Image (tube, rainbow, N blue to C red; front, side, top):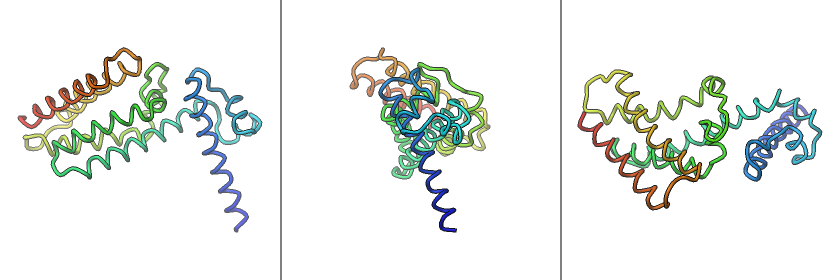
Length: 201
């Protein structure tokens, strides 16, 4: 039994090492440079070994996307739990979203197809990809001054906020933004304005 557990633990470690090596390559050289051969070189395995864990490069990308959504969801939950009111929760959650995007730029690019092709159909199959929308929606419903808001009403508020924040993030990832101070001001003005409009109903 102990032997089986040890074998499984080694397999799990190798899987994590493959993902970590992939992200390391991307941080140093960009997504276009990622290949199974390079991953094998970094972890000092032969390329065929990697195929025992992941069918192809797309499978690695999908697993890294899952990792990104798990980290983002945790950050959003932390931001929400540290604030007492829905308005403060929503503001803090979008700031956490912003911080995640720049602390994990490569994952964010992968998750949302910024400067690269997004496997959007596959990403949509990940249960983890729904978590941010669900968390934001719960707070938006609390904030809305409407009895029994429809799903469409909540989606409209969410996508309004997401479009502004994601757009500003994308502009800056593409290095077309202004100073950090200006970006922060634009971000806060946009979030605050939309939150006020939600509160008014």
